[in-house]
Amino acid sequence: MRNSMEALLSSAYVTLGLGAMCAVLLVLVIVLFIMVNREAKRRIALEERLDRLMRDGDGDSIEDMVSQVFRENDELQQMQSANYQDIKELQQRLHTVIQKVGIVKYDAFQQMGGNLSSAIAMLDQDDNGFIINTVQSVDGCYSYVKSIRHGHPDVAFGKEEEEAVEIAKSGGTPSDTVYIGDTNSPKEKSERTERRPVRKTQPSRPAQGQQKASSEEAARRRPVKKAPPSQQPSRRPAPKPVTQQRPQARPQPQQRPKPQPQPQEEEDDGYYYDDLDT
Image (cartoon, rainbow, N blue to C red; front, side, top):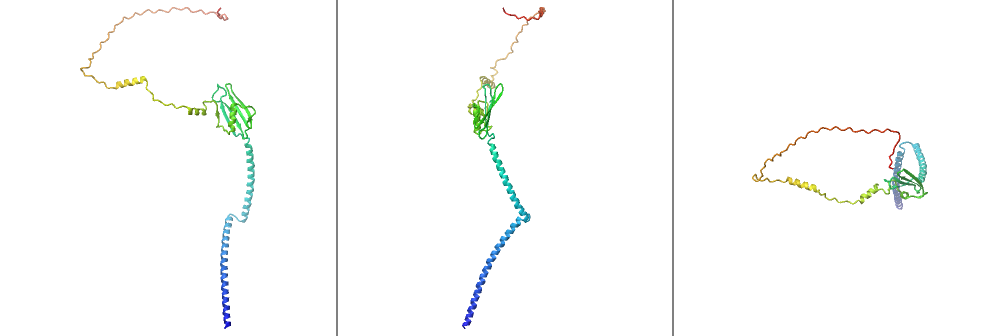
């Protein structure tokens, strides 16, 4: 009896152990299946990327393309360094290029008009340059040049020259031209039009002669009342004036003009006589 019971218990334990092992193996199979599926998806994505990359060629062409990209990158770096040097050199040259201009137009003499004389200052970034002063006179036109170093001239400035240099230092352009003493310049004209007072227009009165003529025309246009026939004055024909005939004058005999003596021409003896009052 005991032996039969022990046999049954041992068979039950064996069955339970086998069931537990089967359950563990089933779980491991499921986990392994999930991992294989994930790796398969990654492999499919990688194959798609390789197909897209190798669509225009094989593996050798891809290697050539990569090497070409590196070569182009090296060339671009060399070009960038060369451009940097060129830009740096241009910036250094810009310091000595004319960048600022000042123009002043004026009348050098009172008898001259129209602001024909001018002072033109041309400076670079460091206020180095020159100024040209052109003086217009009745006799002709004269030009004078003065060099400028850091804003200071080699010869003293005149009034107009100093003003032109100040305009140039403040970053002036050719459109910032200044006119001195010219009433016909555009700037002076605009200022005069702004200052000009506005006169109120009064209604014009008709002249005395026009008033008289208008009153006479109005009197003519008025209707005139006719008097009855009994009160109208009788109209008789006026007597004709008697004209007296004057006796005709006898024609007088025509008198012939008397011949006038002609002056005798004096002979030219080759001398010149001057009448002097003594």
